[in-house]
Length: 407
Ligand SMILES: Cc1cc2nc3c(=O)[nH]c(=O)nc-3n(C[C@H](O)[C@H](O)[C@H](O)COP(=O)(O)O)c2cc1C
Image 1 (cartoon, protein in one colour):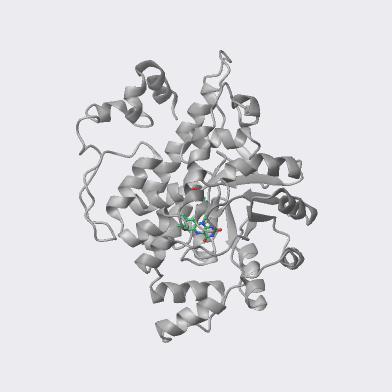
Image 2 (cartoon, helix red, strand yellow; image 1 turned 120 degrees about the vertical axis):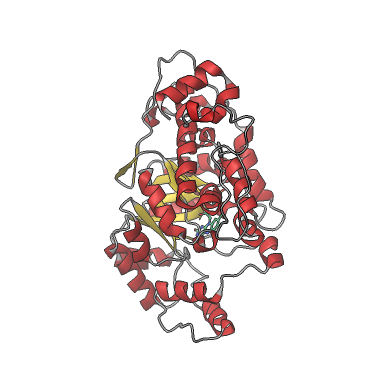
């Protein structure tokens, strides 16, 4: 947030929130004129872009995405598994936590930068691995990569993102991690890891909470179009899959292509073929965190897959303190699930996370407005987080600590 916008917030009160990060002169009529900064061109989904004010928060991007995207694709992003208990808890648990700011700390600006896996980035808000991004916007992960690079933060690229390792690497020079779904064919898996290393990815995330179980997707019969699935399988290294195959043949191949019964031994194998830092994503239990540390895994992502897998699991933020305590600084601890506001970032860091990953916030923004949308949502989260830091007297990320939360 630039200083002028922050000062406007201080001096003009909550009614001016839409001015944050925007030029006040452009926004005189924002509250009354819905057409400001919107346009009417058709989107890739075929829906006409409705007239809406410029988004000022993540929830606005969600609404915009809903109005602009195909229903089944929007539902794929937005919904959670079964009764969505975990999905709701991820968000609600943050809302229950209260920030408890000390006064008069003499702080008027904050340095949001931090270091992740030895790389300095501009803010501890990273893009989580999100599959199927070409379904949200034609430029898919290329747009996300450019937006993350502009924000000088990490883009964690899903194995199933819709573009190859090399295509995403070429899209922008910013720091990238690769999230690996493991091909069952170990020769393909080995080659993929070699390509990830060669393309300059700075860490590999192994997601271990596999298998989404979402009623909405079954109801909508949401699947990747055949051409996208063929490209995905070929991108991973299954070059025997071709567009000449029937849809049924490609689907059947896909079902058998992935290692879905992973065990801890996998990390030993992975470590033996790459020196790149490794993270494990999907950890909620202390004993699993301890096991990961004992295997020399460099980072842990506390996550329940955004409430998209087994319903009824606890909110990630509620499990974070246990994991931080178990890890005792021997690995970097991240969390994701339910981050919608800058104050959520502050809360997660106060409980010991080194950084947070966001999924739906940027998926909605990508669907709503491509690269510009992702840039904007990252800017909004950055501004909110800076406001949260300044308001709690933190001039740097390492000032954030547990005393900022009511116990
Ligand atoms: C549309 C969508 C697709 C996802 N695809 C993947 C994936 O391919 N790999 C993965 O590890 N996690 C995937 N996730 C989970 C995210 O990495 C992350 O854990 C989750 O979105 C965080 O919760 P949030 O959406 O509340 O921020 C996906 C999430 C969404 C919303």
